[in-house]
Image (cartoon, rainbow, N blue to C red; front, side, top):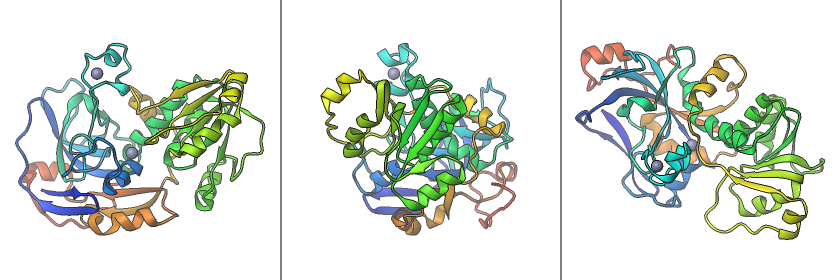
Length: 348
Ligand SMILES: [Zn+2]
Ligand SMILES: [Zn+2]
C-alpha cells in the first residue's frame, strides 16, 4: 500500500509498503479523505510540541470499512465512517469524569501515533462512526466540526445570547455554525478578505474590526496570543470567554477588565462523544459544509502540493483524496491490490 510519511520537518516521502499485520480487535479500513489543518502545518514546519519523526499525518479522516471483526455496531464492508482520532486511557482523572477529550494520556492519530495519510489503516472499532448518507468529504469534516461543537458546549451558550467568534478559519467557522444551531446571534471577526467572503456566503455577519456591542460569549479561534489577550475586551459584563485556539507560550490578560466584568474563562480542547450528534446535524442539513473545501490533492501529490497549498491565502480547507478501487473490490482482490488510481467521481 502507499503511504506518505513526514520523515523530518519539511520533507514528505511517498512510500510503498506491504499491508502491516492486523492488531487484535481492530477494523481494517480504506482511507478515502484526509482533511489537513494547522496542526499538520505545524508538524511540517517542526513547530508542533511533543511531536516525533518519522510520522504519518492525518487526523481528519473519512474511511470505508474493509474488515471489521467483533463488531457490536454492525459495521459491514463498504460502510462509510468518520474516525474519532482520540485514543484515551479510560482510567485517569479526566477519563473517570467523562472528560476524555483531555485524557492525561491522550494519543491522537496523526499526532502522537501514525495517522491516515495512507491507503489502509487499522482503527479500534469504537472510534468509527458510520453514516452512509454523508459524503466522504463531509465525514472528514466531522472531526474539525467537533472542535467547534465542543467549544460551544463548554461555553453553555443559550438561545438568544450573543456570540462573537474571533478568527474565521475552519475552527472559527465550526464554532459559529454550532453557536447558530444553538439559537444564538453570532458575529465573526476575521482579517483575511477571502475568508470574510466565504463566511458571508454562509450569512454570518463578519467584520475586520470589532465595533459592535460586547458579546455574552466570545470564542477566540485564532491561536494568536495578542488576539487572545484582546478578546477579553469584547466580553460583556458577567460574560464568558472560550480559548479554542491554543498557543505555545503566555497569554497576558488585562486583569482589571477581567475582574470588573467578572468574566469566566474556559479552555476548550478536542471533543468528547459528539460525533453522532454532529453527523445527525449534517444529515439534517443544519450544518452546511458546502463551502468548506477550497483545495484538493491526491495522496501522491502531498509531497509536492502540501507546502504550496498552505502558502495560498485563499485556502480554507484542503482535502487529500485517496483513490483506488471501491472497498468491496479491494476486499476481493486483497488490500495490496494496486489497480488504476484515477479519480473516481462516484465516491466523494
Ligand atoms: Zn485538524
Ligand atoms: Zn485518560
